[in-house]
Amino acid sequence: MSSDVIAVVTGATGFIGSRVVKALLELGATVHAITSGSTPRDRLHEHLPKVKWFGVSDQDLSHATKGATHFFNWAVVYDRPQHPDALIYEVNVNLPLRIMERLREQTGTRTCVLGDTFFRKYLPQATQQARYTESKQALWEEVNRLEIDSRMRIAFLQIEQIYGPGEALTKVFPLITSRILANVTRIPLTSGSQRRDFIYVDDVVNAAMSVMDAKDWQGKIVVECGSGDAHTVREIFERLHALVGSTSILAFGDLHNDQSIEESKADTKWLRQHGWQPTIPLTSGLIALVKDVAARLNTVEWKGK
Image (cartoon, rainbow, N blue to C red):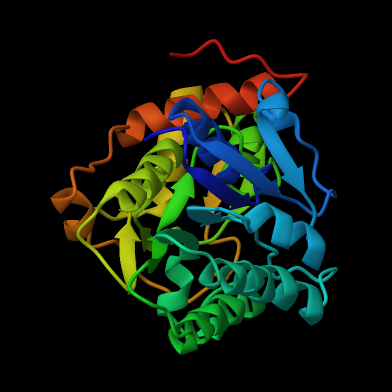
């Protein structure tokens, strides 16, 4: 990648977006980060001076997209009680559309990589994130309505069950890991029978870079991103439990399943044909997750592998 690449990144302070920013900077790109200003920039503290920061106003978006060659969308609002419908739609649907509308006015080739979710394959009520899933489906529908010329490419990177260090401790796998590390007496869980395709966060970032670099695709495409294998949620929790040597009781079945997706995994053919493959084995990824969570918990020190 040459230094004439200008990449617009939303969600630049988040779990995935911050890693994408770092990867782009390492490749010599100029990064224009779009942020509402409500999220701390801790994940990028060493790189803050290298990034140009913009807000979400019309004026800011016009400045941020001027001359841009690439767009990476990682901004997201999840379906939580405190989040109104209007906010979910504004961030998950309207913001990327506003940016792409401006990119359509630019000259030269523009490549858009939109972070997507495997939930979009299913009915919203089958997931535990109905409004979030609906918003992702709405974005897909709106993008399909966009009229684009041969110089603009849009890829939905449909990500399976992502995990890894740095994810918020309130998310399921860091949360359960923290309880396992703390040797909580009994940890209520679902049956754990549902099967998911676990993909390490750095492999997702590399997949995004592969989509960006590929020259043989045009128009609008969906690229599935995962390991290509499925494991039960129960197996993952049991592996974490064994790695830690925890005394906690994993109480499978204490909770009802919060979604009805029995199995989901990616078809990675497109990515593999373009030179990508996952590089972090599941065990190595889980060890990295445990180390990270232990380091962030002031009262816990993990002396494992």
